[in-house]
Amino acid sequence: MLQVQFLIELFTRLKEKKIHTCIDTSGMVALTDDIKKLLSLTDLVLLDIKHIDDEKCKKLVGFSNKLELEFAKYLSDNGIPMWIRQVLIPRLY
Image (cartoon, rainbow, N blue to C red; front, side, top):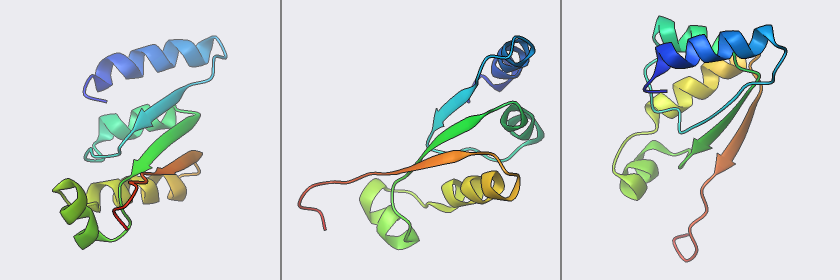
């Protein structure tokens, strides 16, 4: 999603040809107008959520889950299909 302008152009062309679009992401991006435009062109989002608890997420990966959860809420609120994938680490819990 770092190349959002390219993806908007690509997904626009794919949609014109009736080709399914999917993004695999951690959701660790700010919800800018460009990201929202891209998501409006997306049929499915594969979303990694490292941990639902913010403090445990910070301990696990070194950063907050705030952006991930805001991203997931935006997808849900806007009817954009998502598959949430939870990371499992043996012997951690």
